[in-house]
Image (cartoon, rainbow, N blue to C red):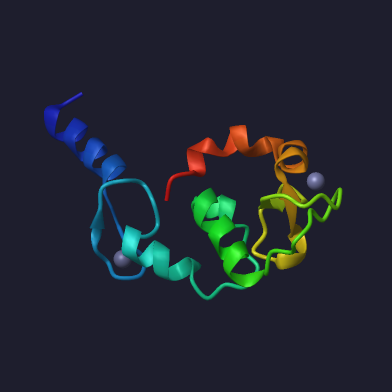
Length: 121
Ligand SMILES: [Zn+2]
Ligand SMILES: [Zn+2]
């Protein structure tokens, strides 16, 4: 293949324009990072995991919006409680969360190991 043709294909593959602001983006995606962030805001019940929202910050959201009880919601033990997800979908929905003691938390939220990639926000 000619050099110009190769370059054309490579540029076409690598670059695009943000569909919102028209800014050049390096990756194959529809929006630049800023517009992508804007586009997911204001949506109601999104699956945050899908958008790579930090696992940690979602837990913080639960803590901020759902008052921790004195006892574990599963076994009733008085202990330090952690917000645990129930459905495994990590919904931004308080009904999908409960406060569990360490032991119940580990049972319920064992999926945490699979979610390390989303952690550390
Ligand atoms: Zn943009
Ligand atoms: Zn418990």
